[in-house]
Length: 294
Image 1: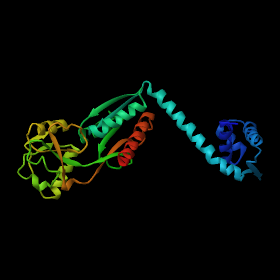
Image 2 (image 1 turned 180 degrees about the vertical axis):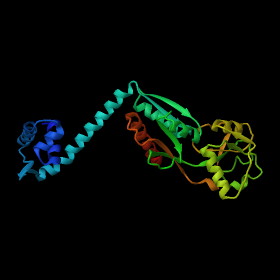
Image 3 (image 1 turned 180 degrees about the horizontal axis):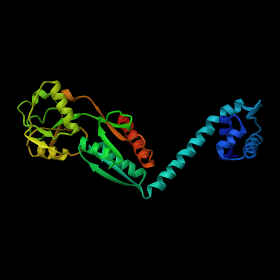
Image 4 (image 1 turned 135 degrees about the vertical axis):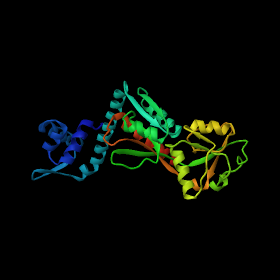
């Protein structure tokens, strides 16, 4: 005989409230109704679940063993309700997302849309400063950027970690190298990102630490512009290691002074309890566990 979910739900509330009246209030039912459910459950299985002690109901050992199961059932029902709510809200829902790096940004969006196919995602691309400005002016709901500071106005999760690397064309003399130092780039034509780029911030900070000062031959306002310049043999560029899967005529090289893996954060306003935003952040958090296990 299957155990009634309604009775288990009532049992869990009685266990927590220690009174029939408290459980009835939590369930929105009458006291006689809750009492009847518990007595029926006890009668069906020939067990005693509670012993009256004063005004309280004291759980028996059988009740102590049953409660974790009943609790899990209630949690499962809550998760099921959330999934159904997500699906309902998603029929006409739109989530506005700003991303700095194509990866992990697009991979997260793909996973989100697989879970919630009725939602439309509007994507804004740009450097760190632009995405943050869009967020501050409420033109996007969620952002994905490297090294977002922990602030009380934000809720954030780490979805990935990566480092900045050098990128050269396959015809460049350094193409065969797997690792170089910043000092090796002296007198090399370099391609920098424009101010506001998280990539350039990492490069500039490392150069300053090493007391090096390099001037670029090309200044690009986008990652794609850097990659195109490199592919055309204009010099050495810098990118986040996994920010693009483009591989035509390009070779990535680790840099001694830029070995730290920098967290990529997904973030939203701390007071944004939107179902779509929370679902997106949950998927972002799961991406990190997948990348770590992989």
